[in-house]
Amino acid sequence: MARYTGASCKLCRREGRKLFLKGERCLSDKCAVVRRSTVPGQHGMGRKNVKEYGLQLREKQTARRYYGVQEKQFKGYYVKADKQEGVAGENLLSLLERRFDNVVYRMGLASSRKEARQFVRHGHFTLNGKKANIPSIIVKVGDVVALKEDSRSLEKFKGLLETADTVIKPKWLDVDDECLTAKVVANPQRDDVDFPFEEQLIIELYSK
Image (cartoon, rainbow, N blue to C red; front, side, top):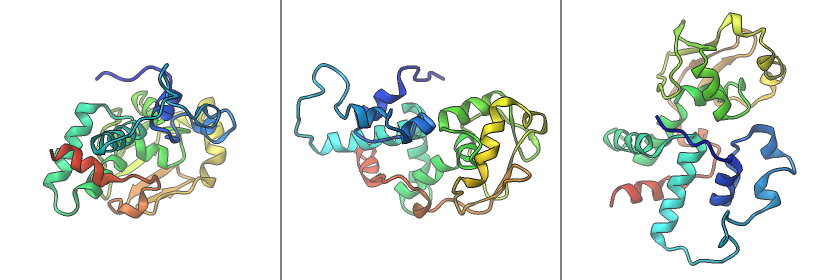
């Protein structure tokens, strides 16, 4: 699948808010949104009246970029969420939260979702004790994600392991910082998503 390979900070500037795509850099004074709050491009300084469609599009793009999902796959999540019982917008966010790479990020074992996706692809994590290297796997209640034993001594994980216990974990994950495992104990609810999405705008966009 195609993957965006451009500058991550441009995506944050385009949406006008931090998407936390570069880990600690997003929390420092080096954050592009703090240093340059305008939209990228030669017309970035201009002001435009954003209409309803524009608001819906920007919200969709924000969610897609926040979770690192391409357009075709994101629309697939919407179709699946719309067919499930309950509120479509909340179902959509629940599916995105349960992506394998997002679970690794929520465990505190990656500084960003992009890094988590790379770790998963390189085979550093297991799902229910078996090899799993597909970031888009949707975990379900009862699944257990774990860092492989032979990956724990790698330099890239040592710094993350020192701070993993300080990361706030979502209540739908039962994370064991000593064993470096996480069990899915429930499906994520709307309150578990800490980013201020207006998911109804996304649903309205796709419902047209």
